[in-house]
Image (tube, rainbow, N blue to C red; front, side, top):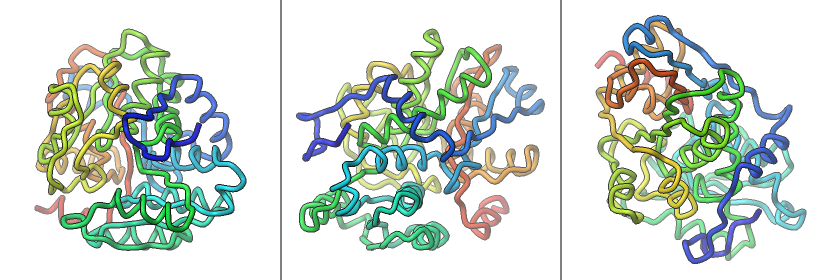
Length: 330
């Protein structure tokens, strides 16, 4: 599949489970089959059986590698020759730069000037050409469309793209293949690529599962959109969950979320820090704030899970260590 020129609702391409399967075939032997970890303490605290899909151990440190690699692999040879462009606060930036490097495709990455330095350095380390913008005064999507048009680049957004969605769905597919049927699947929500892809895979493999999205309290555009029945735009939110700082859901993602997602909830920055602390202290893992969105909802009983088999996607672990320590010390 390829992204329609406008990327808007008038020309939507909706991925299906077969597309997730094709993405899994492209990723075979390239992406890590991220481990599934459990915790007796977490189970006792929630009175549930939790299965954490640890995408913090994925290549590039986050689930984003799945969608980025799949989208690049689906390009034509001419598109590969011309190069690719995206906009991202960090994880998709790294993932697309890495996917481009592995497949011999030059990548231009538009990043906010306040992006974590670790993510900027990693993006450059993977060969990405970084161009900065001000997230509070400039429109990254407009910049991306302009660069794509001016330079003939293939635009691969971080979440609003059918091949990205299909690639992200491979994480939930692996999780259910590993642990069996689930009662609930909880996934972080920013622009909606992971949640939409997860919902496609989960509802196919475990039809009775409830799929729940979790976003930062400060950036509740997903909740508003879900309740209103249309994509709601908000000003750029401020949250420690930098990977979920978006102003609206993707137009390819929203119809899938409407049809397949059962609920969307929010968590506070304080709850994210508590989840980060839990993983560091009890499970000896570094999980970035955005990666903790789903876990914070389960561990904090924001969404009730008692008595259920629950899959929780930990979306990434790319956080500056000094920042990580400062957050836990606060």
